[in-house]
Image 1 (tube, rainbow, N blue to C red):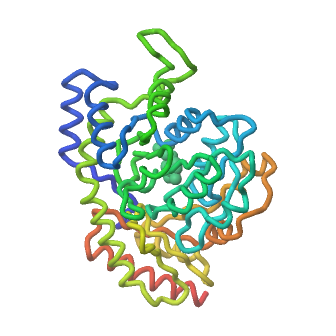
Image 2: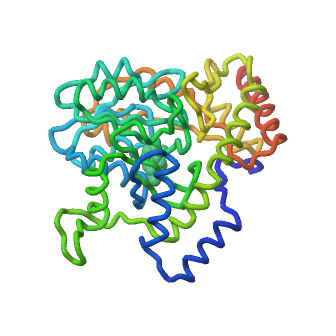
Image 3: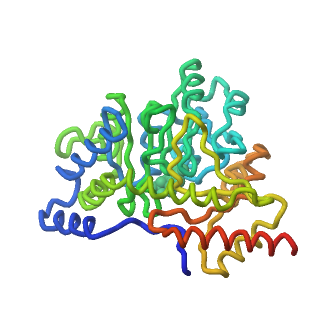
Length: 367
Ligand SMILES: Cc1ncc(COP(=O)(O)O)c(C=O)c1O
């Protein structure tokens, strides 16, 4: 493969940081994790940040901390990574799929209003592919109804809405540091919040509900982050803006090279948003998307489909009796294609991606 889809930006600095932690022999929690939490909270602009083992756990612990459970419903976009919806199942509540906006792939405000009911206790706004959901509109709805707005910013470290970083709008936000994300600790996650009660509950939940050594007040588990992960995260956080700038540069070059291709819809950036291009997601219309995908792969360019199956059509949710819904999500799952946009791409790489895509589209158009 000549051009990879994801390349984690791990360099000498991260390697040295890991060695430093290993030499310190302090492997879990402790000063490294505390420093990472402080720096991440400062970056996002929240009072608290709590490091946990991954983004799925971050979402689940937020729901737990909000006492969401059996009998409750949570609105989730139908077009997202499965963890957004399964974290709701994990706490015994019911995820209710909401359709998404065609242009941004993000949760539709109109369909949120359709799906609200007295059972709905929260909305999870996913900032999909690095473009913020309309958190201003969602916050107004949530405040109006007295329900919680939770952000899923697993794909959107450093993205901004209305001049503020995502992760600072909802009652709490989950971030993921999985290997492919805009910043990574291998596996890892963090919760940001301004709410002291939520921060305190998550601090307990992630560490066996322990209030003093071997004294356990509530049911928790082991969802801690290691010092090794935190040390990598601190370096990655320092590089994040630079890495995001490189993604934005690559994205804008792709957009310039791919404009006016018939059958191709390019990503948008709303006037109030700063997109951090975790993925550069295009829509292939009226041409066989899978033919284009295979053609790109044959030419040495890794591309992805995010996501081939919307939430309500996943076998898991079909078994639970979920009915047909969300026409935009269904259609997007058939036409989305993600192109490489990672920070290590050169100008020539981006040109090669764009040129190959045009050729593949032409070839598949005539088939
Ligand atoms: C939108 C979204 N939510 C949640 C997650 C879960 O994060 P993790 O893989 O760290 O558990 C991911 C990433 O994988 C994601 O993309």
